[in-house]
Image 1 (cartoon, rainbow, N blue to C red):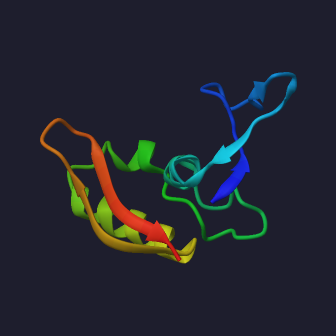
Image 2: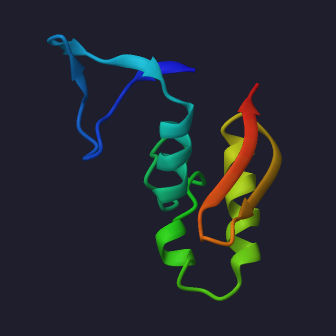
Length: 95
């Protein structure tokens, strides 16, 4: 998907004096994973709140919630898992 790109701080990214437009799927995934429920006014059930969920020992609930929310956003998820190094790997594409 092509959309407005944000920088590492969440501010608009500029390139050659213009707002940067580019591939944004990973950016959308990150925002959904970090957002808490209710932060998206139009879709109050969207948001994983992964920062708070990672304090819990039950990592399966994090994976289930992430998969459910990403599918709600229009992704077809083939696999979602935590790697041994702690990284979250999402194998999926937007429809």
